[in-house]
Length: 159
Image 1 (spheres, rainbow, N blue to C red):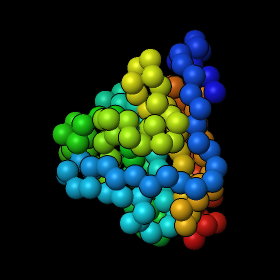
Image 2: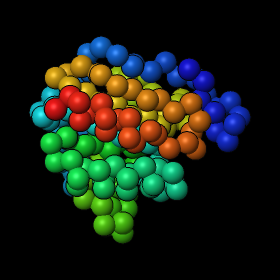
Image 3: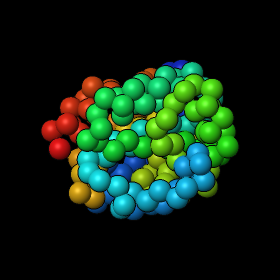
């Protein structure tokens, strides 16, 4: 899959889009370890490259709002930022959702979404139920926002 940035070819990735969701354990913005296998289903995982950019901020704020309104769904956000960068952003923005640091691309490699040229994660959304990936959106254009409503519809139907 080709990923573009502002319409120009940027990188190619080979994302995992169906099947068993690989388990992972990453630190959140408070340095707590969070493992996929320990979370209740369904789970929406919002992935973005850098919390300190405009589209990533919009995406994270939107999923934070949805998390507050959908308590029956587990929400995670994952970026390459350090836990400290994530904690600073959350404090400044008043965001309370769990954001995980994939600074070493552990998650990104498992899910095939590392953009090697920039060492960043490709913008994507995964919905997982009972350990299975039931919805995936990998954004082919880095500056586009995900289809929030579709991810929520799939997760709501999986409750």
